[in-house]
Image 1: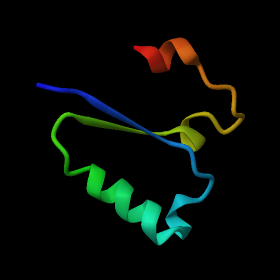
Image 2: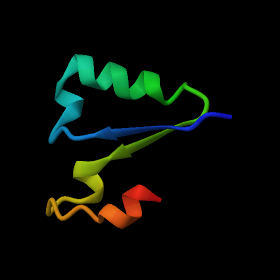
Image 3: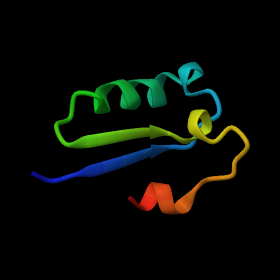
Image 4: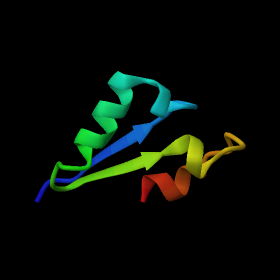
Length: 53
């Protein structure tokens, strides 16, 4: 099975119809992992090693 990683970098994606539709639609894709980077790293200090894993 293939793996797909979708990293979302949008401060308020719920206000964007296009980004929100993409995000919600991506939830339906088998093997896709969604990561809302603003929610996970509100201080913008991304843990690169964790994201590589």
